[in-house]
Every structure is written in structure tokens, then in C-alpha cells.
Image (cartoon, rainbow, N blue to C red; front, side, top):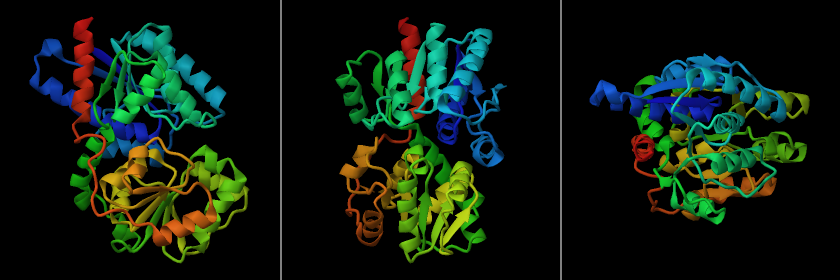
Length: 364
């Protein structure tokens, strides 16, 4: 069997690492006739070393066979260029399956290209909804779900979301492959991550912040409010900054006070180490919300809604939007409960993903 995995953005590198390891393990224990060949197609959505190559090295992901080098750009231009380039590769490779992850433009382009060529699509992290159609990610995930053959969900909430849209065929709960990736990372951060030493950080003495979503970075008022909140907090804040966010801050002449320490993007192990030791995390990232929950670090989400509603319902994640006063109040007063429910699986999602693909293929 040949699978084409389509990735392009940092969170997808993390997710595909877990599935690639599951494929390698399957091939190790199965006969050669049942081997799975994975062809990785990297669109180039995240393309510099700090946002891309370091993840392949750290997470032991096989090198992409096809690197499309699309780069950044307006949504329509980027998606169109990816669609055309992916289609050419799929025609050449003629895979049995196409795997797409999450909700990026790479996800949408990969799913559309496969659908046009009548290649079965497995959407990993299916069924998530923010119910905010102003988010490009929401459009991407909705379209991908409606044209996929296998919808591999992290939770019952995701299944319910699909059911509400009339999607029930091919829907499976497998858990979240990011939990698999996190377990892999936690085993390595003690020996491979020296980021705290580099920045002279002590456990639970700093806040960790990330800002990258267009709803915040492309809205001057929202970004000003978030920066005002960070500047008003009298704690050390570590801010690994996305290149696009850095440029926007410069263009808008938004300045951060010295206690907000801007650093370049970091690798996966370093990021997990920073999350693990933070007193609290402030973020607009979906993946970091989950990682904060699993690491038992209180999380403040700088958005008006979240796809990961279970983390809010369980009291470990607080939505503040871009409200300066609400952010400051949450940092000072937010306190999660003592108990924590298990969410999004047991760290074995990747093997379930693979098994569902094999089961579906056998039925056909």
C-alpha cells in the first residue's frame, strides 16, 4: 500500500511524526507483502529552518520525497499553487490513500487534489469546529471533512460536530496523534532540551506566550490589546515569535517592554520544555492548548472561541479573547481544579489511524 502524506505547517510535522513511526513499526512486524510505503509531500507553507527543517531532524520524520517550495502568500494564491503542484505529484505517485492533517491551506489543497483524482482521503483531526467562518482554518477543515472518506476524530465532540452536518460514514474516534508526539517528546526533553539553561529560566517563574493566528495578527486593535496586556504584566514572559508576527509588530510599531523576552522560534523539544516549566501559558494556538492540558499547565487562550472545548469545560483553559483587562485578570486569578480528566486518548492514536486505514482498504 502506498500513502501520500501532505504536510506544510509546523503542527502537521508534529502530527505526522507519530504516524510515520507507526508505519515504521507496522513494516517491522509485518510481512513484506503487507508493507506500507509513505510518500511525504511538503508544500513549503512553513519553509525556513526554524519553522520546518529542525522538526524533521528532531522528530525523526522521513525526509519529504517531494518539497513543493510554495512558501507564503495570500490564501487564494497559496492554495491554488499548492493544489496544482500536489495534483502533479499525486498523478505521478498514484497512491492508494492521501493523508491530510488539521486545517491549514496545505490540508485543503491536498484534500481537493485527491478528491479530483478520486483518491481516498483520510483526514486526521477531523470534526473540529470553532463555528467562526471568519477563520480561514474553519473553512479548510469543513471542506476537508466533507470530501474525506475516513474522518479520524480526536473526541466524541468532534464526532457530534460531524453528525450535526450529516456526516456519519467513515467517522472514527482514534484520539489525538499529538498526544503520541508529546509522550515521545517528554521522554527526550531532559537530555535534548537545554532551552531553560540558555535563557536562565527556573521552573514556574515565567509565563510563555505565542501569537500567530490571523484573527489576532491581522486585526490591529486585537493585537494592540494583547500587547498592552503583556506589557502590563509584571512577570517574565517568554515569547517565541513567528516570523510573520515579528514583521507585523515592526510594521505596526508595537513595542514590548523588557520583561517580555522575544526569542526566535524554537524546535519541538525546546517548546515542550518551555511549556512544561511555565507557570502559565497564553496562546492562540490550538496545539499548545492541548499540550498545556496534558502537561497540567494553566492555559489562557487569546481567542473568542476554541475547537478544544473540553479543555475549557474541564477548567484548565480560559478564553479571554483579545480583551486586555480579561487577559490580565486571568493571569492573576485563574486557578484550574485539582483533578483533571483524561482527554483525547491514551497516546496510541497513530496506531489506530493506521488500523482504520487498513480496515477500510480491506472492506473495499
